[in-house]
Length: 332
Image (cartoon, rainbow, N blue to C red; front, side, top):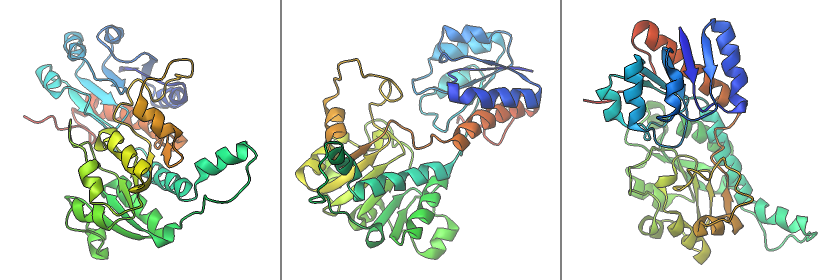
């Protein structure tokens, strides 16, 4: 068995190499993304592992089929950038890593919130300028707030435990209720109720599809005054301009954003020597009421190792048995 792994970062290499040695399976490591050009490197291999934010070109799968490669294993959760129709046409099975570290993302959402509640971004900037005055940066306490958790999958449930540990009141919404959370009586009937009753809204749900945002001018108008939004899920859940306007006007207190609807080509890139043309994102960066990070909530040693190894294990299972527990249902 021979595998090839595309889009590999430096921090992933050692885990892939260790897995290869322990499994006695050859894995070719490629730093380039999987494209119609680079897929040619996969000729002679049995399966392809990959990760990238950019869309996967349909031509890739035509070439995979030509080479007799019928499994693509992703090192990430999201599959919205993969054209299912092209996979089905070429009889290619798809796997992902559904859970590499829910705790990493849940912990990060609270980290960002605490920084915002205690005005750390502004205070650090002041101290850097030798301004050591307290006012006007008085903080707020999490134990005094109601936190609304939208989405109670693995990450949402991990977040609930942490927020409860701080003494916050927690409410939750999900189309599919978790039995244990149901017993605790945490669920509200709909998202509108969650938004209206929460001092903090933290998003842990999938994308709603192109053009469908959860946080926008309409939904913000129904939220509590001085509320906070946290998004470590998907950038397109929020209309960032509407969110910025709401914070700038004083309707909302602030936001913690680890994702952004236009992040592809920006996040995880060094643009320090380039002209920055995204006006909305620039305003967010400059505002003391926004904590912005470039999609790093997942970025821990545990998570990176799991992304590298779970994807490879899923590939081996697919090649040996024709199935794995991480296989994605491509539909009819």
